[in-house]
Image 1 (cartoon, rainbow over the protein chains, first blue to last red):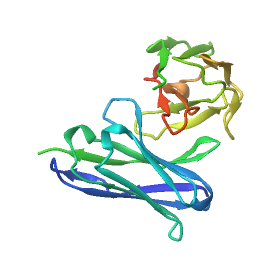
Image 2: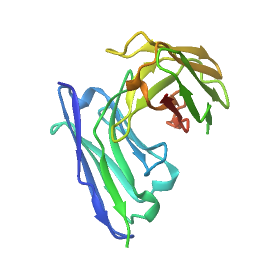
Image 3: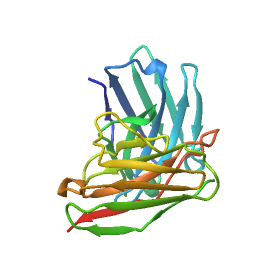
Amino acid sequence: QVQLVESGGGLVKPGGSLRLSCSASGFSLNYYYMGWIRQAPGKGLEWVSYLSGSSPTIYYVDSVKGRFTASRDNAKNSLFLQMDNLRVEDTATYYCVRDGDALDVWGQGTLVTVSS
Amino acid sequence: EIVMTQSPATLSVSPGESATLSCRASQSVSTIVAWFQQKPGQAPRLLISGASTRAPGIPDRFSGSGSGTEFTLTISALQSEDSAVYYCHQYATWPPGFTFGRGTKLEIK
């Protein structure tokens, strides 16, 4: 079964750090472009990061550049998002997505809450 | 950045009727548009890619059309389970400047 499962969310103070993980099963992550999308409570969808190919070029939305670092470990079939210097406005559910034919596979999401 | 404008923001339709959701791009994106359905507490689900191709397992009650800057998602024979927020998404720009619309909330009366 093709599946993405995120973990690592939680409550963190402003300026703190979190590392999100996304474990893929049922397919080899190596063959797909992957990404992270977030959704603030009651709001719409926003791209955070996009990783292209097996030797990835990584793109970030301007608001997270210099603070977030995305990576992939094809041997572990996993995707990661290191989030540093978190801000209140980073509060959101973070989804790991597969870019197959469009965004055809989504994880269930992990909630990140940044609050003092 | 390409802006995707969805209308209406909210739509209320009776069961068995059809709903037409619109999405306009601020510049041409050819047919590189997808539609997603999101129910409360769930992740979005891909309905349509390439403006008109249904994703596997999506009923043929869902249809997409359009090209350039104007796109439409039509849902026929509405059922209560179709209550959700629907998002359009363009993935035409590179390096990725992919953008989503703000969503249309569909309510089944």
